[in-house]
Structures are given as structure tokens and as C-alpha cells.
Image (cartoon, rainbow, N blue to C red):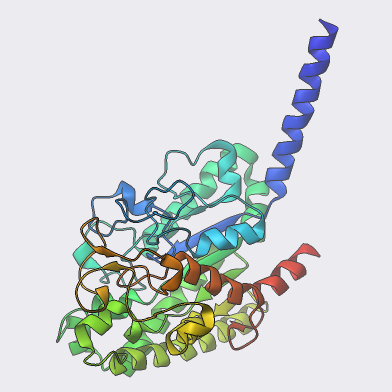
Length: 363
């Protein structure tokens, strides 16, 4: 009897130790679109899903997860840097109990800054709804660990926001003479997006987050989908590249202004356009054989339609910068996160993730 009590006591101490370790590990929250969706759309009636092969072919399970990648995506590689397991989709029934301490992924493929972006996908989790779920998450966590520890966990968490690209490719440029393109000239549309993003970022701050990596758009005109539709000789779409070149500098200005207003470096700009421009302009330098042709797809540049079991599929995903018509391969995602982690001010402003982690570990 005494020995069984002793064993029980040891197990209790171990369990409490594990609990405190998990609670101390930095939580990670993800908001945004398909570049960072870990599978929320699997639970929705929408065409914007990545839940069938060959998606996930290089994921550890070898099966589709809802990530728009052949394997791991940007949040997965950031989770690795935090020493944490990947964030679960908020809609996953597995996200309960102690797993809530790891954080959660609220991202949903197809969404944008604007609520009318991605309307063709019908049932997706728009940004305002992602924030509603985040509030719901905090209530659930509070019932587990109490309101004070919940507030502390959220304040100390790392947050990733990836949004904006769809506001161009799935809204302004979705069809010729789209409603938004009739309403706004491109420079005015970019200013409008930035003003709406400002409201979203302040809402995030109100919800308690204090360290947010905000990614810019990639080289919108160079993705295989745009090459297939707009390119004659493999050149990037000048109009979409112009959109990215207008949007990204104004994003950095917005974050700088908000940080000044808040008196702290809450928002960190991640220049993913620059990283992906590096791949596009010199793919061989990064070990890619092509940055124009998608690994999975059909038509010119494998850029038309969806990636399905009937699509062309490259045998060596590591040689391709793009997995499908819009999304990077696992290897490209890893390189993007490497620049988020250690990049200089050309890639990260005002500091990179390594600096953030070092600074925050001292406070």
C-alpha cells in the first residue's frame, strides 16, 4: 500500500511538472489565410480545402491535413523554433484541455482583410469571425487555468498574421472589371486595405496580443496561377507586382505608426515578398530547379485549376519553389521562416524572430 502511494505521489509530481512546463512554453496563435491555415477549412462546407491527396504527401503522416502544402507550412516551422508542437486548427475537436495551452490556429483559406474577399468560397472564417473565435478560446482557457493566467498567456504569446494577398487575387483582380476595381484605382484600393488592416490590428491589440508577426504579400504576379493566366513568356504580371510593391511598403509604415502610437514594438513586419522574390529571381541559388512551374497542377506552368490526384505531380518537391498554383512548397516555407528567424532589416522590421525570442526571454 505504501509503495503504491509513493508511486502515485511520484506520478502526481511528474504530471504537475509537465503541466507547469506546458504552461510556461510560449503559446502561439495564427490568424490569416491559406498560407497559414492548418486545417480549419476541413470542417467547413467550402471549396477552399486541402484535405485530399496529394496535399500532405511529405507531411510526417503522409496524409492531407488541410495545409495548402506538400508538407509543413510556415506556422509549423515557427512552432519548431518555439519548441512546441504544431498549433491545432481552432475547429478541431482535438483542441481541448492541456492542448489549449499550446495556442491555436484560427486561419481560414480564402479570406482577406475585406469581408467581400473570397465570397466565391462561401463558407470561410473571415477575420472578424477569427477574432470572435479567439475571444471564445480565451473564455475556454480561462475556465481551465483562470482569467489571470489566461491574460498572461495571451500577453506573452507569439502571434502570426498572414492576410492581404487574397484581397488582390481573389477580389480586385479576380475578374476583369471587378466591383472593387470599378470602385477604386489601385493606389486608392491599397490605401483602403491598409486603413481596414489598421482596424484589425488594433482589435488584436485590444484582445490582448503584444507580439505579432505581420507578413506582407508575396510576389503576387509571379505565382504559377498568374503566369498561366497573364504571362506570354514566363514574365511576372506587372500589374499584380505593382499591387505588391504598393502594398508592402505601406504595410511597414502602418506597423511603424501603430508601434509609435502604442509605445512598444508590438507589430513586426515580415517581408515575405523579398524572400520569395529571391526564389523567383534566382531559384538555383536556393536549390530549386524552377520557381515558375508548380509541382502539382495542370495547364501552363501547372497553374490552372486545383491540385488533385489527377494533376501532374513532380517527383522531387524540393526542386520546386511552388507546390500548387498559389502556395510554396515545404522547402520554400522553411526558407521563408529562416529569414523570419534570422533575416536583417531587408526581411524583418524592426527586428527578426531570434531577437524577439531573446528579448522576451529576459522579461
